[in-house]
Structure formats: C-alpha cells, structure tokens
Length: 297
Image (cartoon, rainbow, N blue to C red; front, side, top):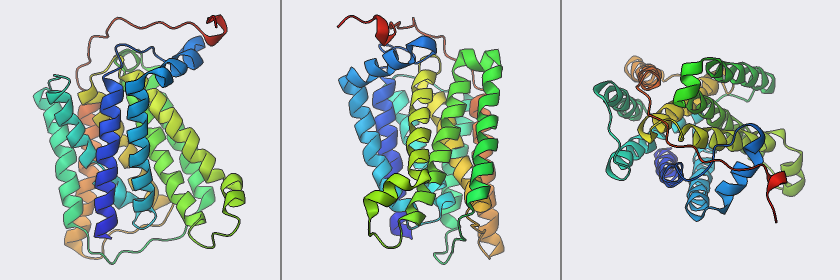
C-alpha cells in the first residue's frame, strides 16, 4: 500500500505543477462566465502554457487513478495534500506571493495532517463495497453545499466561492474515479463497451472539467497561495468523508492510529476554514473575450 500512497504524492505534485502553469496565465486569459464561457475556454485551450499545464495535470490524474485503484480513497486523498505544500512554496518563489500568519497556520495544518495520516498507516486496512444510491445522494448534497457560497457576494468577489466549488467538484471526481476503478477491476472483456456504458466515467469527466473551470476562474480574483490550498483541502475532505460514507472504509483498529487519522481529518477541515477567511487579492484588470458567435473567422 505504501507504494501506491507514494504514487499519490507524485500525482499531487504533478497536479500542483500543472495548476501553477495555469495560474501564471490567469492575468492574460478571460474568465469563463455568462455568455463568454465557450469563448473563454477556447482561449484557454489556444494558450500554450495553459494547455501544457493541463497536460501535466492529466499525467498526475493518471498516477492518481493507479493509486486509488489499490488504496483506500480517503488515505490517497490526504496523502495528496503534499502537492498543496509544494504549490504554496512555488507560489512564493515563482509568483512572488506572500501569506499572512493566519494563512501560514492553515498551510501548516495541512502538512501536519498529512504527517499524522502517514503515521496512522498499518498496511492491513480493507475497504467495503460501493453503495451506488449512497453515492448519488452524497453527490447531490455536496453539490448543493458547494453552490451555497456563491450566494455570498463577498465570497464571489474574492474568488473564494469559485475555489470552494472547484474543490467540491474535484473531490466528487475522486469518488467517481474510485467507483470507476472498482467497476473495471474484474474481467476486461468488452472494455470499450463497459467504458461507454459506465456512468462513473461521465461523472469523472464532468466533475473534473467543472473543477478546472471554476479553479481557473478563482485565479482571476484570488491569490494562488489561497485559491489552490482551499480548493485542494476541500477536494480531499470530500473523498475522506465519502470513502467512509460511500465505500465503507473504516478507521484503524488501534486507538492511537485511529486518533491520528481523525486528527488528520480535523486538521484538514480547520485548514480549509483558515484559508477561506484569508484576505482577498485585489482583482487584476479583467480580460474580455467575445462569444464565439461574434468571433470572425
């Protein structure tokens, strides 16, 4: 199991690098909002740096799929928070961003939570069976919860609401990925047909596209050092809770290991709260793009 959890760390590092590349273009690319959604996304896809970042993220996602196919999704999710720490360091060094004491406390909580999770591993843990109905209910409730911050004007203006919803979307994508790997874990006959007919495949695609779009939008108003850790923390909270609720994952039998595991979960939630309340960035001059119907060819 340690091998696959190590692969999860590699996956998170690649995803963090891809997001950093995408963030460097946020001041030069339009937001995907209103009638300009399609035109904005088309502009992103034409940008070499942005599309390169998306490619690096895709490589990270492939590593994540391999890791989550062999290890509990809740454990993979928390191990993946190492990428958040790397992204924060890169934001300071490459982008020249700065963090307040409150923000550093949130970042430290994320890293310490990952360490506690590592110490709680015993290598003998098992997973329960997937409950499709529970996954559906969990998805609906989490989607509604992720949309709620968008009703708050301050969170919308600061880019925090978009970062929150991106984290929820990525987290649901992780749960769909786990469900997908369970479906494909047996006989590989007629794999193409099974791939097309499996609803979790479409859930993975939609959830990750929504997550990327919302996170890129948040980069326009929020500092990278805030937007990505907040999104990342939430994207890990969702599969942590979902792993227990949907897949029947259990806490370690030993009291010390169980306490460390719960402590890691609590620290993740606390870190998200600290970063959500961080001061906002003054938005840069927005980039405007016309809808595709108005673009001359």
